Image 1 (cartoon, rainbow, N blue to C red):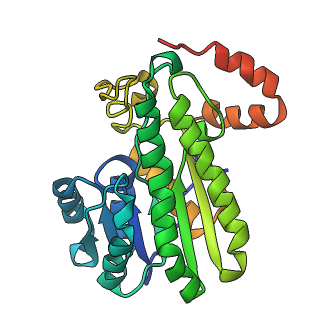
Image 2 (cartoon, rainbow, N blue to C red):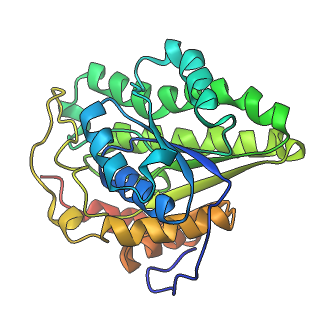
Length: 274
């Protein structure tokens, strides 16, 4: 577990090529800028090319940053994207699977097509990109998958049923991948954010598939993305297997779930569902 109060020691991603999805905003943007300061070569991807170009300009060495548009829902095209990404700098050392969408709706009010879209973006899109680049890692006998999941990937909470399901699924898939490819020198780091002050709740899907278009109070009060990025970078360089980054209550919930599940159930029931 990484504490938000831990002192960040100097790190360096020199000679590392890092591909980051969801890099146009929030955690992805902050991580891109942080890793550029640590001398990484970067490949930035999302659907929003204009925002990616702005992030590139904010990076320390823009000449070491390549922008590759990518839509996680269009996962039949990922083999071409991987070829393009490898060609940018000759190899890829780390894939940060950060792209995704959240949810704010009750199960009874959520159209099944919304459930489907969340699973396709958060789970199938991430898995498809991972599978597309996996042969490159196997051939090189090294590689590192970093996955932005969520505390909700460990604890299901109201208004986030499909989002929680997609994040739980990522844990299952990547735990299996870690075991299968240990001898290929391939690492997996699961990053579980608590509340981070980004637009994730503004863009979260409601029951009919439209964005919520408002900031949650808890999200607004969350850790700043720049601080989060420093902690995330440390976890990557240390090759941690699973890390919880957030406030005390979010991290406490993970351990209460593990050791006192009935108590956590009572706590979760008391959360607001409006």
